[in-house]
Image (tube, rainbow, N blue to C red; front, side, top):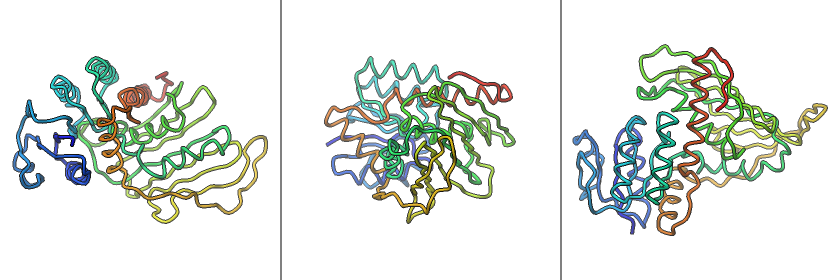
Amino acid sequence: MLRVGLIGVGSWGPNLVRSLLANPRVTLSAIVDLDLERARTIAPPGVPVARELPSTGLDAVVIATPASTHVPLVRAALDLGLHVLVEKPLAPTLADAEALQSLTAHHQRTVMVGHVFLFNASVLAIAEALPRLGPLRLVSMQRTNLGPVRRDVSAVFDLLAHDVSMLDLWLGSTPSLVSAAGGQWLPGGGLDSVVATLTWASGTVAHLHASWLNPVKRREVCLVGERAMLTWDELDTTTPVRWFASTVEGTMTRPAAPTPLPVTPVEPLKAEVDHFVDAVLAGRAVRSDASVGVRVVRTLAAIEASAAKSGAPVRP
């Protein structure tokens, strides 16, 4: 059994509690939060609640606190010899993310970043189907809604962290060039809306749009390859991923009717927690380790840097 503590019971905390309790190889041994009253309402019977991480009695910790607190909390957990699952982003700056990556190597403990979309069945089905698309030419991604608005990070580090992590999985590398524009109208951590263009050395181009100032919720992805196209509508619960046989090399042909791509539904957060537990108990590598977290933060930082320069291109 893996004795796990949870730090942070904000909006995501109850979901983590549920997913940890659902794993038969986990004992939820502590819940830590500065707001003891809320922590007590979230904690299952018999689980101790505290404002600080206990120094004994744990094997691993899950950190679900604001990004600005990740560095000291991850550092404290590693100093106690604990394995760590920390919510995205790994850190609020590239320098902090790289420092945590170095700490991970030094302490020889599992540090996994909670990029939950890397455990989404549709995302994994797309990754498996990508070779059949042929060379990837274009990706477009939309992630909009009216809130929730974060005060500790911008829409870039909150919303685009999801899309950039998926692109990292699908393409396996950091883009070579980033250009972005956005705006901030609400008090808080930064940009409320952003449009970014990412370019890879292979020639692949990705257009990203993220905003928490949009009355329409959209979670849409389109991937265009040399031989075919794929679309994914996260809000479509029946046929979320569709395949379009077509060609975009030299000439454009209108695709035939789409073919649904088979996707076996799983709960991404539960799959993420299961993956972390498997890795710790079996001593295996994790899908979203600190190096993945650093690559994602490197791209996010470049997006913010380009937006601050009115869209001037930035190399991550």
